[in-house]
Length: 591
Image (cartoon, rainbow, N blue to C red; front, side, top):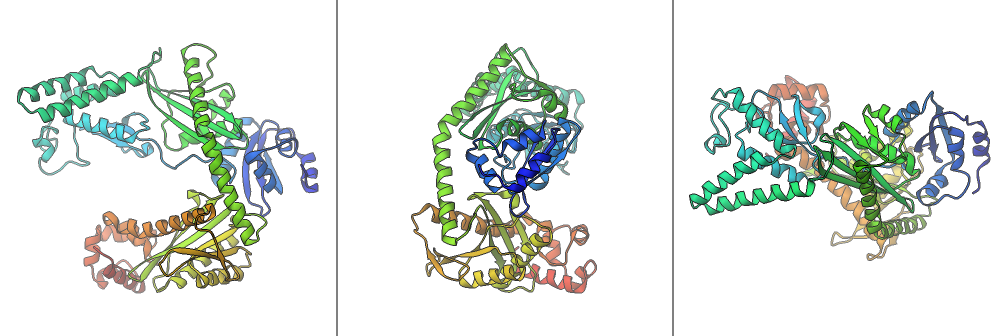
């Protein structure tokens, strides 16, 4: 491997100390962050010997590196995670999605509620949490069943009068009646016992209700209750494992082959194999990135259990110090067998999916290479695509999606409010592009290799005008539609049409980007108008910031009341010109 003179000289100066290192591309953008006990040995390893797969792609992109020496490996890990959060480097691993798993929450209020929650860090009350539930349907089904059997409070806040749940015997009427604490404690105790795996009491209640329904010739209800029993029995039979540990812990293991890292997580709750999670991704340094994966897993609002079980590839003291939790590496016994089972599952998953994953990667990179040659670029990875959405030809919003190597990078999606005096697509596009790339220029953000616009020569001309005015040198292209409103050709920055075979993988990938940015822009308006989303609606109007938005919400409280307001009412909170903008907007949107 040919190493530049600059990097050779820098390698001589790297100390043999712990720390974090950052790899940079030709634009000075950090594309990978790592940590090491010995910075010199680790950084040098990238430029010596044979590298393959994602590591080869990384090394080909590196033109410089920096490093920060730390006092310990723990400090280097903390710094690594901090820098990954800050820069979101292209070659560091990302979890599949930004969703945390659902939990079942039994609130610790005067009148408890049972519900499914995701963002467990936003609880208003101290609660009991059960989970995680990898299958949200199972969580909701369980909550619905228990809420039917036990007459807990169902409403978010107490109503003024008895509701339908009271008349169905599924609520005790907490809004009107004072309920004895002993009754509530008995219910919550039985629910807690069931959610910890003891189904006897709940099963008996269902059996009694089923017998009563059968005796009353209500066979439809009896059949429904029979299905509940079957669900409980099947679920608990599948989950039960023979462990002498009746507390919560998670098991992590992996299998690595051909530059792919397969991770398997088991959730053990009160002696039950409660559920599991898996991920497969390409990686640069699987040992470090497996550790990084575990840390990221719990940062996504998944609750830390009492203990984590990991293989010996993990520095358990380092992970325990970072997460402030017990970390165990078993060498024999039932827990070691469980750890081995997680590894087997990770291996089987990778073997089952490897050919499909490899084929998908090959197809993506072949299409990327085809586009690179068509556009005459030396490098192509990051594509940013734009589209606008409007309401009755006015009140435009813009959407930007980012694809890296033809994969969506949702952390890099952006929404734009457009000035209310903009009345056409080209003006909206001009404003959005200028704001986006002025910010890229001023804040030294990562530039895309290609800007992909939804449109033909006119849109590309506007894009080129903006990029040239900022002297950014980014390639601008457009996807042009034919008379039947179907994408037909690619328009390059010379305003020449490039024919692309509609059956080709490149056409499919470009169409996917086009569909995604269109969906994203339209969803902005839909979200604003849905469910009376007054706060989001106010975001669209230029001149309304956080302070004014809070004042409007405090004064009017609902979309209905705001739409009924006249200009004088609005001017009590807003300046005259902003009040007029908001008034005009409110007159044009649907109720």
